[in-house]
Image (cartoon, rainbow over all chains, first blue to last red; front, side, top):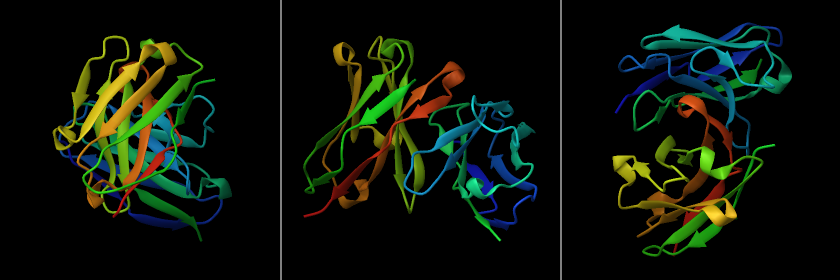
Length: 107
Length: 118
């Protein structure tokens, strides 16, 4: 199975800050990497798919980049409603595997 | 709009089985694969498997083979997951999630909590 190592596990930032979250795969996942946001008590919501494609309806402050084994989610200017846990998911090969999550809080 | 409505919370005894449902609406059910995902505080998110509603074909995470069985009812646009021989380690929130192009999970159900306790 492909292991997804996500960092940091916890992040505290201020409104307006630029925030980055990273995922490292144990092997090349050919850009088949998605990012999800999960708020407390809710289902995960797709933000970015296949590394850098913004899902319909998601604000443009969210972006993704990466290739090979290393991928990044960036929030260009943190908003209060962005407080959530963020997960990466690789769907390059089965079983699909998730990162452990990054809990993002406001400073 | 695409909606996946899951069945409610379950409290079940060890050794028994439970069948969860996921009713799809807002799209052609047989045009998109359906995934099932397990979420626990300890293990995080785990992909259980995927089913092609058109053909009934399935693919499972080896970890869940023998534990989970995925089926569909095309007439009601509903996907099902049966979990068997339940233990406390099966206590979790289970999600269904539709797949669009390139196996991207773009829409998720609200989740169903399963608690296994005597």
